[in-house]
Each structure stands twice: as C-alpha cells, then as structure tokens.
Length: 404
Image (cartoon, rainbow, N blue to C red; front, side, top):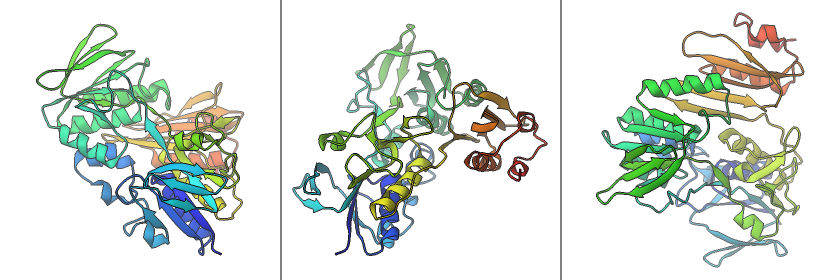
C-alpha cells in the first residue's frame, strides 16, 4: 500500500514539505490542507509589491505557475482541521471528513499578536498575514490619507515604506528605544531609520500606544503614553506573532512556545512532524523558534522528506531579508551574546557588520551587499576561521577567505 502523508498548512513550510515528501517517495499519496481558498502563495510580497500595486498574490505561487498539482500533490482548500486523532492516525475536518494518514506534517505557521486597544475586527484596523489582508489594506492606502503603524519591526517598516511611496502620510510607533532591535545593531537600525525619515515617515521610538478610538466620521484618534495625540485614517498593527499551536496542543503534542521537535522535525509523536514558524527545534545551544521565509522553506523540505521515510537532520544557517525603498536588508547566522562587533566600511548606501565569536563569524547583517552575504553564509556554514582585521578591510575579498 502506498504511504499516505497529510500536510496541514498552506504556507512555505507546508508547501515545501508536501513537495519534498512526494519527491522522496513518488508512490506516496500526499495531500496539502490549507484554510485559504487559493493555491499557496509567497508571503513576502504582501507588504511590498502587492501594496504598491506592482504584483498580485497569485503572481508568486510557492510551487510555481502550475501549482502543487504539478508536483503530484493534491491540494484541499477551505480545509479547516478540527482534530487530530493520534491513536487512529486521522485528521478530522470541520466539515466532518476524516482523513487517515501514515505520516502527518503540521505547518500551521504563526498568527498575528493582537493588541486589545486595536482588535482585529475593528473597522480600519489591519493585521497583515494573508492575501485577503493585503488586498483590504491596499484598498485603504489612498494618497493623502494618514496611516498609523504600531510596531517598528520588519513587517511594520515594510508597510510604512510602501505607504510612503504611494503618498500616504505615515507615522510609526515603536516601544523599543530603536527600530529593528531584534535583528540588527544600532548602526544598521539608524541607517534604516534615516531612510524612512528622508521619505517623510515619522518614526517615534520609545513610544507606546495608550489609547485608540474610532472617530464618528471615520478614522481614529490615538494617544501615546507620553500624551501625544495622533489622527489616522488607517491603522496597521505589526507587533509580532505567536505560533499557531492550538491544533497540536489539543492533540497532546509537546508544546513550548511552539511545537517541540527534534533535529529531524519529529514531534513527541513519531508519526507527526512539524516545521516552519510553528516549530521549536534544537539550535546551537538550546531549543529555538524562527519566523522567516527561508527557514520555513528549508525546514519544511526536511520535514517532508523525513515524513516520507528519509532520515535527514535540519542544520541550515538562518537568514532574513527585507526590502524598504532602495534598501535590501539581510541578516545571516546566529546572533551570539558576547560576540565581537566588526564593521566593514563601505561607500554609498551599503553597510556590512559582522559578529565574531571564537575566531569565526557567528552572524552578519548588511544593506545592499547581497554578494558579500552569500559568501558570509558559506563562511558560517563551513565554520571557516577568519581574521577580524581582514573582515574590517573592504579590500580583502570575502570569497578569498573561503579558500583558507
């Protein structure tokens, strides 16, 4: 009998898991279950090209133009999974269907972290997670209107950049002392902050929202904790997300800020795997959870292959990227407390900063240095010893360091 593999979640991790499972075992019956009504699509364009009107979600399908069917995967849309009956190896859908499995991959991703002052169902308030969210937000971003973005992380700043380019007056509130504090150092954050200021975006750091109320004639009046009043026509909340573990938790799987998995993406149930934003896996020192596009693809691939009988460990070097105006912001590696910061002086609109620990690059973040960071990724993956003086010298090619 052919192996039956179910994958729950139509994001990048789930889609890559389904494709990888079918590739690993061409005889397997692989079904991808998604709550959405459409073919799985890439999420990064939602806060950029889709808002700018230069692309539609369906222009960037994760599985390619022909969809998952071209990879031998059956797609079930509007598939709301209600229960996992582990003892029977059955997934029960809300419509009553019972789907048996030999192996199951959970890739339910993350859900937006809602703030009580701005609930998701409040008119004019937007949380950006799906193509429907992006379409609704785009319709609200009209030149001359006023936008308030709550949260100065990657998503919030990408929305702010897109809005500013459209001609929407934009204000960003960030509770931390600087933007992008989770992913980059002060120098890189200041560089990005300055780019937003040049485009007219008002970023207020060290500022929290104290109140927000809809106006009778439309729009909002908001107040910060310092007493400043803000008037906005549209509000976007980008205050992070949390793993969507409800289904897994109800089924009794081990949960700890995500579904706990081993290096092979296997959960506490040997027949069930998990990958992407929802998974908590062994990092360099302890269990970690990552939320970024490349991690979801890479870990989804490993989970799918192992669900189909392979025995592969997930050991990818994490990375992220963001586009804001003409800035291409990237980070690669594992930030390590106590590492030595080594900046590499570059001209123009380029930046590159390394974090070095025990003579090796642990992490690097840069702006408009895609080729350099491709070399850095290989230096990290191969654990190549580096000289901090050479790293700080832009005349020393990073590719040459790979030959040592």
